[in-house]
Length: 493
Image (cartoon, rainbow, N blue to C red; front, side, top):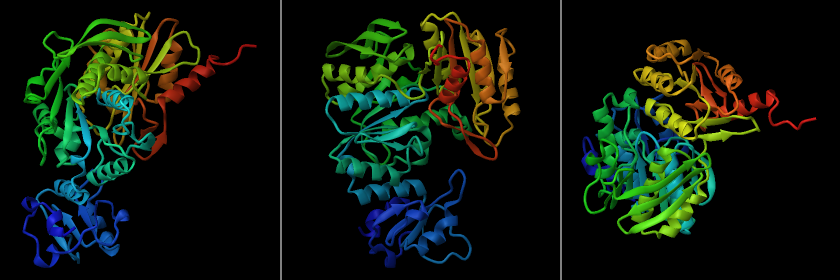
């Protein structure tokens, strides 16, 4: 495809030189190692590196030109095209090179602070129950036509997205369910995508190290419902019980869900217990019954969101209920570790104050003897949420163990001190232990029959990011090993 048809004209900072306009482009790349002759190389500032550093390598590998929203480094030789927004230009270039593939696919995008991953798993399960070949793109992993792939970002950069779209189409699939993070929306990673349905879960404090204000955070979420260089989604499925619901989604295709009577899709006759949920889904076309192995009030919302999305795709209630029932667990989301101990141990990704409240509420609904909560706060992230997380843990738990999460470049003790401020007005017994493995051992040692132990913060993650290295660390495996050291799970003599 000609270069002048690939690059969006309104983003070109200084126009396109005539000698470049007619050149044929084969692909768009941001990783110089993937560049092939005829590729356009996009260079922009990332979190850890300046893409211009790799421009010379990309040109040496055969890139026809470098596209950037920054000027070229001193002494740089080769074609350099400056644009107003590098990631947007790359996303629209990928769309053009793909022949606007998302117009042929059916995309469901999910945004919100909490619940995106669980909603994604539920929606994908519903679509597969309908017989569709699907792709699932999210925080934990990517699924493509039944194959599991490692996840690099919650929402990949546009060249990676379009590779997944193309692979799905080659497998005969059309339905994509993807988590759309606020970072991806703000940075332009999903610019130009055509969404069939947009889903909003909720909005609570998170990522203010990036967005700075809640207003900017909400504005990023709103972009999914307004469309970015593409028409707005045909349908929007919005949590009616969230305070920001009225600002998201418009038109006849808008559907609300929730526990209030005003929601279009709501739950009635809820039965919640240790083994999961059972309730009727009431919607404008009638009602149907669902049962799920997922537990707790928060998962009523996730299930209702999936039901609303299924209805937006024209699926029958029987198919939707079947898909809900098939989704028996989500990795790292209230995931149980059971080696025969007389108390429940659950690992959860909760890493905001609202998410901690939700997961503790799930535990409380099971009527345990006590709830014991372990958590930590991430380094190089919003410091202001640390005491809020500690307060949320102390407010609803019987024992709290404060430990390290992913400290990154920060001192773990300093992070824990920030969090400790939120514990001061509570009398909840607490333990501070910076070594996460020892912390897990201490909370499991304290557990008694009938208790629920929550290991919060890392969920599905299998690593811990320290200042100078990343180490293997999986809360689930550590908990299992500690419990076995206590004698659980071993055959009795």
